[in-house]
Image (cartoon, rainbow over all chains, first blue to last red; front, side, top):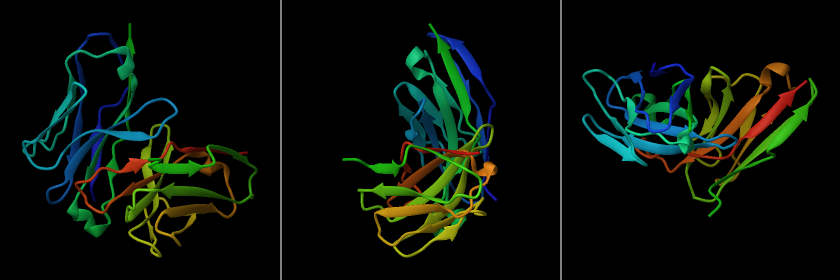
Length: 115
Length: 113
């Protein structure tokens, strides 16, 4: 079945540092890939997505590129801020799961950014 | 536009008690889902629905039941709560495309003592 593996945290950075959170996946067919962010006490919200190989999703300074050859979708940001402190989830959704469009999530990575 | 609304936000149950969690969405989405979130486990799918009147089991369905009598509502029931069901529960919806993201509610924090 489909699966997502993302780097375990927690990750602690200083403000303006470079961020990478690794994500790799296993899936049949051609899944869509997502990064979600969860701020304390809130639900998950979409950060960015990519729906086909070599697509780059971007939002709020975050970027991730859909790499089919390495089955990866690593999240990057050039300069993090304190307000980026949150839990980040990598997820995939694809037709291999039939017509039910379920998302498969990684376990999440807690990011803390210190001033 | 409220999006996905979950009630209640918090609940404490004693072992063996029952309760129903309500999820309502106002986006006319076809698909709705219930996930549970536990430390170190990420999100795991409990049950989902692909339309009014339909339900299906997800990854961890045991101990839960669901109903989708109206398109906008998706109910999650615990008939006899157990401490292992202590978790944060999230409802989500999707218009019916694997390219579309899920829209999540803010969660229900349930403690079973």
